[in-house]
Image (cartoon, rainbow, N blue to C red; front, top):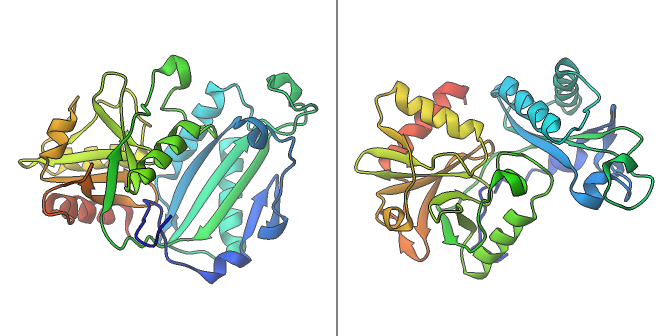
Amino acid sequence: MTDDHVTTHQAEDDARNERILIWLNGRLVPKAQATVSVYDSGFMLGDGVWEGIRLYNNRWTFLDEHIDRLFEAARAIDLDIGMDRAGVIQAVLDTQAANGMTTDAHARLMVTRGVKIRPFQHPSLSRSGPTMAIIMEHSRPKLPRPIRLATVPHIRGLPMSQDPKLNSHSKLNCILACIAAEKAGADEALMLDVHGFVNTTNACNFFIVKKGQVWTSTGDYCMNGITRQKVIDLCRANAIPVFERNFSLVDTYSADEAFLTGTFGAQTPVGMIDGRQIGTGQMGPMTERIRALYKALVGA
């Protein structure tokens, strides 16, 4: 990564993050002691699911939806989290209290199938129950300029290979896409779907603005982003034309604006795609309007 490289998860440095306590299997432990076995299913095979949630003004934004998605993902991979919804929420609140956090914090909840008795794939080898961790950091987004994207050959695939709606620990496809984009001189990757339509980036959902209309993919091959859906809902509630549709790179290159959505950065402007400037290359008026509506929604 060069000094000119930015990411959608770029945050201000905060020395307090060296002193955080991490929730690990029911215990709050210092960062340096928050370790798991090399036999853990997550470390060994990426066998697990996760969620990211954000704290604004002492409130975890859309917490119920994030916990719903965590349990849905766990059910999809036949993983017993070992706690009910109330228990997971209480673990989040306990971690928040232990770290004295009130706003501008980000939590990553991770659940794996747990420690294996032998270093092989079969789920039955994980017999000690799940491993669960909550990493909670002081985190204020800091983006020095709009994001630059590069289209990559890695695609978001069909549900029968690895469903892109699944928030799993197995992220290698997205990591390879990100590496390809960086090699091309961009910050992150723009990924197409199986039909060649513009879909998502390696880390966030993707939107464009054309002639006052907001476009995003059909949603068939991308993460079912909670922030993505909130943006769609906000547009509909505020008479902003919004469409979930197939569109191509030709449509994208001629867009007036482009932006990304995600729990961490909310709405992140895109200034360049494949070496082509999008609009003015800066955050456009529609993106600014949607950001203001979103901030009002979450109370940021």
